[in-house]
Length: 391
Ligand code: NAD
Ligand code: MG
Image (cartoon, rainbow, N blue to C red; front, side):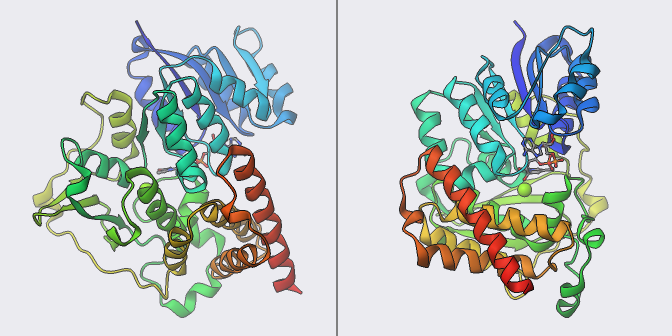
């Protein structure tokens, strides 16, 4: 029996790497739903190639274009948030969550509620609503598998281990586009400069988040939520070669490292075949040729996002949701040229402080409605902060 699978965010970088893997063994999979954003022709092409049951664009106004691109194929076309949720509720064995941003949360929860295994590339899901997501998975007997390379590495290092024997978890960071820049040049960093990653090919937003280390900040929170370790047990280590993705330190002093090429098809393929290991089309590392791997501590003055992640974990509750929403909004503003590179962290910090001071929201119970409302409110706070800063 082929496995029924759906891919949310199919047209993005993770989505395309997932399609690359399943297209190598089409007989093994029956594709239920593919989702995308505005790139509907690409979405339709993939839906036809993979014989999907339904293709969904997140945006209502793209429905006509999607329908025309699918005309005659027999594949259903749908658009909008409700359609995304309905597609996520269609029975599937395995669902890839690869939408970018908090928009990935609700479809991921819907997939867990129907008992599907959720392969989680969308780290925002755990940052915004970790407790809710883990409880939903447990209540419905659904498995949650990490796809972020660091978290897949930690997960693999923990196989057969007892989490209570873990002393620390070290996640590595390449340092992003500006790791070798003098700190006083960062203020003037442009969008084009922030959009180039030295090691990984990824979507634009996560690439910029790598340059600011907001991506690593999200990943530290993701580590806490996914593995249930204390904030003090999580360390970030700059490792410019991006070969070691994470290390798990045990109480006997052993440090288990996961080493591999910077290719997301490893983490995606691991989640796809779990609990088996199968051959994957990734480069086999020649360590003799690589010769040396280097490491250093991150400079917190250069990367304020890492300091903010600590505050957010300390605060708990819905602080992760506020942090992510403010980050997404300030990233939009940076992409649109409205604020500078260093202002992103300043805006996020300001929003966290104001929301803390002005309402009891952060302590509200973690329901999907409360998370979505808080996300919305944090975005409007971010807009207000940016307007005030500009004025
Ligand atoms: P991307 O920008 O390349 O693709 C994002 C996908 O989401 C696209 O299909 C896009 O159409 C869709 N999308 C965008 N806005 C949407 C919205 N509002 N509603 C619904 N769909 C929307 O992003 P990516 O680099 O593939 O990253 C996807 C997720 O995976 C992110 O959460 C990212 O942090 C995480 N991740 C990515 C990588 C990587 O190597 N790219 C590695 C680890 C984790
Ligand atoms: Mg990562």
